Image (cartoon, rainbow, N blue to C red; front, side, top):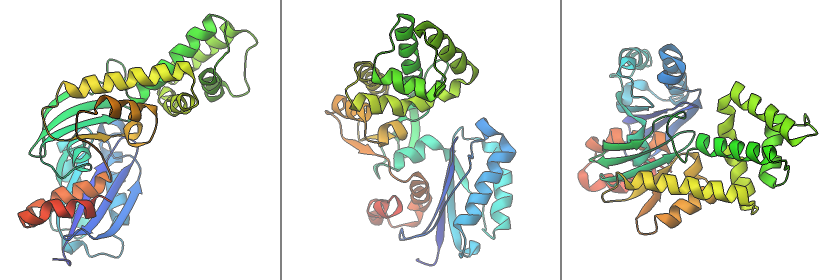
Length: 312
């Protein structure tokens, strides 16, 4: 068994990760590359990113030994299958990867249990109910413009909005205000609060994705006791827990995404609000994809025990 290999791919909007394991869970290759989400970056770039990352992860290994592979792709675009099949073949892998959505593998990164729920907050936010390692219900995930409540983007936008409103009322006070203005303006400050607010608004409108980067500043300010940041963090946690409760029935709730896997006020608030539930945290998602690819090749009694070795 140890001479056969399995491949797991986590192709997201910001990066691609590929894990190569033996069937007993031993990791023999791992690589991180550029974004592999075709919805965000186009099919050609996504396929190239996945192929390059797989090639690096397989360095020193014989592709012909790969007996199973699974690729979790944000957006789950089946049109990638033929192109990925050709890349797998070029690397000597007998068969192309099975494709699944990123929600499923994010859930499996936190637990070996087949049934439960995922609550993910990164740049976006979504909750899903999982049954038999398949998504059967979803809540939010509606994108930055109309949804994703409690996401990094939502938190950042709330911070910019609160700071702009404070400046509009004539105040420069508060740590969060200072951090947001430093992020957007650096040394370029206006003497009057209203002029500064106008400049902040123009910059945010010109590149709205910069707002997501403010999420970490909210965490920093909240940890220091800033009232404005604490209020935003509490509201984000409230939104996220309300979203997951719409779909959760039983089993563990797996927390995933940078907002919820890193220590901070939003994660703490969510954990407190979910104190009545079994809560787990997602670990390595590419490793979870490899574990899912391996499950049917392992004796049933060994599957759960192997989970921890695939998701260090």
